[in-house]
Image (cartoon, rainbow, N blue to C red; front, side, top):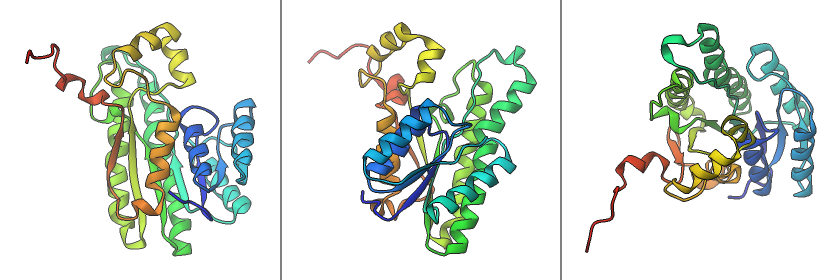
Length: 260
């Protein structure tokens, strides 16, 4: 998975899955433009770790949910690195709630962050890739929620399902430019946001009952992204890669082991 000479833009890269993707792409040899809403200790830590790997790293802060801001993010990434060969689109916003009482304004905001934001950043980067005529790699970070309709997540489920279908459509349209477009569907990943949402004890208890007996890590997702962005995956486009340690297979596993 050699990405020497490649440059990547990773949105939402201050922490969690975005950080994991940025670091693993850098470990494979890419120079990285990381995006987060604003400079912070998290973004500085990510930049420091990438630079320690011997790669160039710049921060292009801005709100990846909004079109005008996305235009600035992409322009500054190109200015700073000279080009964008790889995009990992990782913006997301999630709120849980019962469907009958779900706030319509929050529903719109979740779709904006989870689906529409991916359209904006990918369209802008794809135009740059087409203009350069050197191909490219686009990876959208989706979720196991795209295929499992978890109760209490009506907006997030809809957004991620829509993201998957949008990515396949984009893949079909960009194939003639040799731009690979794929999706990663993480399962339950050990991120700071999950600890805030569920608490440390619930995370520990939940990990024990997962098929792989642990939560996934940002590095697990980052390594999958590095593969999809590498020459090893040049013949892969329009696909969705489930990276969940068997999470989606739980209903298929036996409740009791059969006697032999």
